[in-house]
Amino acid sequence: MSEKEMLKISVEEFDRLQDYMQSCDKESEAYRKMKRRYTALKVILTASGINLTEIDYIKE
Image 1 (cartoon, rainbow, N blue to C red):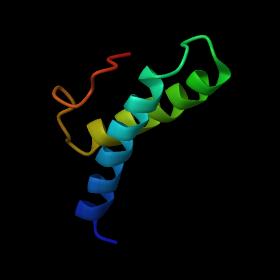
Image 2 (cartoon, rainbow, N blue to C red):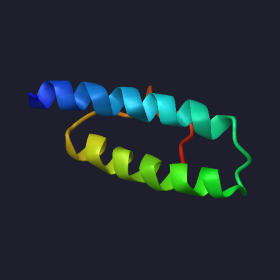
Image 3 (tube, rainbow, N blue to C red):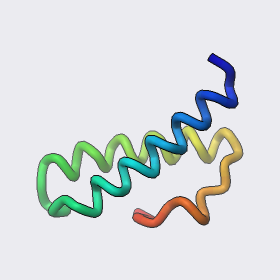
């Protein structure tokens, strides 16, 4: 798998994860687990040079 394909998958996962996060109670265990993945994806995408300004609507 190429780097471009990996970035595409990561961006799609980041977007999908935010949708799930918005539908959960912020105090739930599920939200806390999603938040860890959200943070990891945010670090990966930022380090890869992806501008998250438009696609990060959770902004935590």
